[in-house]
Length: 111
Image 1 (cartoon, rainbow, N blue to C red):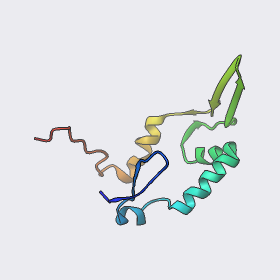
Image 2: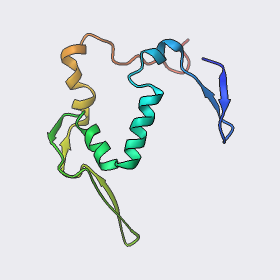
Image 3: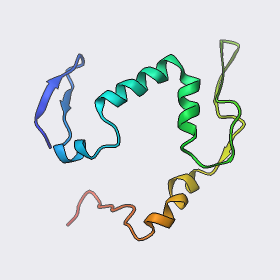
């Protein structure tokens, strides 16, 4: 693990990832900031784009449906869409990755 590089307002330590992980990451800090800004400015557009990364049985027409009225409070995302989480997490990756190890688990006491 890397040494702490700074402390934030809550006095939590922040650790940088090892260089090898950082250079092979799917996203860097600059792209993250750009995506984050878009998610705040246009949440429906942002999450609509993110939903395109999933395989849907029925693609949603409605991204977000919310009410913050105290008497009728609800937050619904992709409510008219239908997907299978297991398929998106596992099955769709099998054609290319069936021979790769998906998970290695080691208990708290390896001995």
